[in-house]
Image (cartoon, rainbow, N blue to C red):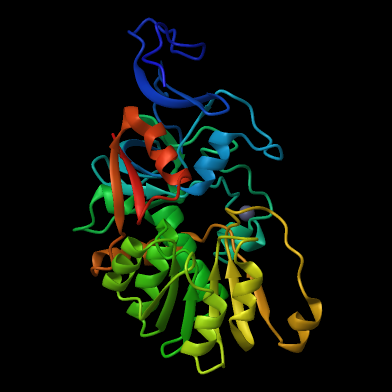
Length: 361
Ligand SMILES: [Zn+2]
């Protein structure tokens, strides 16, 4: 991390009025993020709002972006930050549902709002989705950002900016995985892999809240105690025990109804082995690698159902915020100030976290 830039890069305002600048955390090369002063956005245009960002939630997609990813089509420099909460600073013509001072989060994938999937409220299946903010195009880690008002959701009273910053990606993703895809029901048993992560802690809390039995895996004994305290019924330290055999034992050899995956090659086949016949595996990530070999006999003989899940709908974000308002709040590992964004990423990459890392403006 270097300090402030000496001069604003191109794109700064050049009108007669003194140019307004703002801070922006900018990825300038692999593993190189700088806090730059850049031109502030213009007044919001028709249908847009301008949001003053207050908090950013870090996610593994930030770590991928930071490390550099061969398949991602994007240009550097890039403003980082894929999920955020903030306050409306100004509204453009035609915006009536929001006003300055409203506390909001924003949907960070630029969907079209017009295709069949969008009209059906299945926003993350938009046929014309442009880009993911903070990954393909400039993201939220800046003082001010202009967004289409239709992609903005109000934060209910009583929910902090810090907690609300976890709604668009962490909470929204888990809400979508558990209830739209895996259709987890009260009384069912779920295996949550890597229960100490941001989405793992969220999955434990959401599954317990509807009355599911939760078995979770963690990498050390300190995390085991914390996962227990969150309400997990059984916690397995995957470094000292084989989770596949423990899950078979805990379920009287039947297996679990749902496996919640995001680890990838290290655990994916083990998670499948933990399912009962007809069980559902839902995955939104593969932090341990990209590819696996799968036993197809097992897949169809056991009638497994596997769901790939990425992102969520605006409805999932609203539902997530409502859950927070009713007391189901995110587990926060650390808050770091804006200038220490990279320290947050390093902590996330090391997997030495329990819950979410939040960057405060
Ligand atoms: Zn669309």
